Image (cartoon, rainbow, N blue to C red; front, side):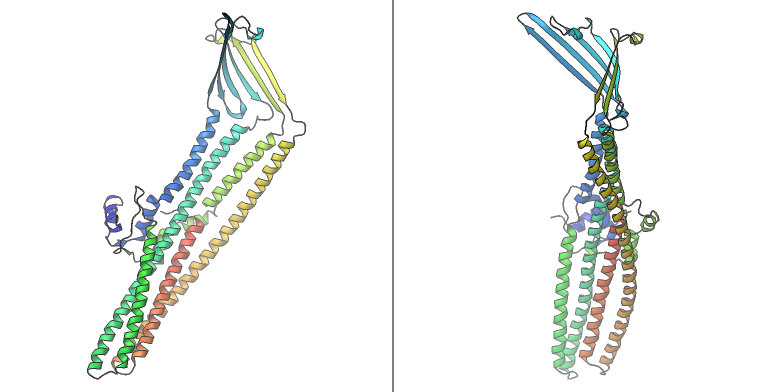
Length: 464
């Protein structure tokens, strides 16, 4: 089993170029580790590469093409025909296709129109559409949609990575909270043990009643239970945190029992997660990955709608080719030797085309409403997250003041107890209130961290 202490020490000296305390896992390095090596981060990158592959496949529709059609028939010593037709085509934009052709035919039973010179007949020409397919056809639509799909997959990759960083951050905050709770319980458990030993000595010399020993023992036992519960919580949160730690070779890392989290505060978390918040707010969410993904999806549907509108036009394909027996002489191609053709096709009712166009319009409308609704939803979520951060920040300041006052009360009660003016019950009561307030302070701090992580997720901010 590989342990985090060794691996993070190695990475610090080799990968990050910094010296890392072998016991402390900082929040910044943890996030960098997750973003670089977690399988989901690599999976998100594959999503973007899917868009690149789709674009490459769509561009293939415009690749030059060679077509060869060869046939030969011979029966009872008679060569009926030997036909070779080779075509080189170059598709271009707006449905225009350039092509060169070679016809070389021989045989005793050729169709008269297939008779060509002995060395073959060459042709160079062009074909294009005048109505359906002139401004947009399937190839053009697919290429434009593939370019937009590439933008969409890039935005979706950013959203996946953003979700991963959010989940990893929350896991780190849970681990940090559990560690801090252990520290609190351990500190006051040690206090209760010291106090119990002192009371036992006082009982031995007759300064305290024996019942004080029982009360001190109960307090120590209760705090030991709290400490064990906090230790179990830390172990479980550490195991969950390990789900986000991987090596470069897709090997999971087990978090060592000796590893501890960095001492963090809301300012540190904000500097790491929310440093780009103002830039995103100034852009009015135009560069938000979700908005970019939805806009790209809408643009693809608009292109499909344009294609469906074009399908309502009649299909008129024209072709014109110049013939020559000597293709090496450019002037041999002239208007005296040519082939021209036209192909016209018009559906009488256009029911299929009109139905597909209506469906395309409905999809565009749905995508537009989805875009508008999502933008409003995001704005409201951002406002709610901002209010949460402000509110929890104010509550935390109040809670810190409350903890300070409880500490003063405990110190005063201990002095009175030492002077014989108070009881063990009052000291423990004050101290229990202090413990509860510190635990509430930790919980509130963790809630503020989660609110900052939610803001990071909602705004889909990039991680520096």
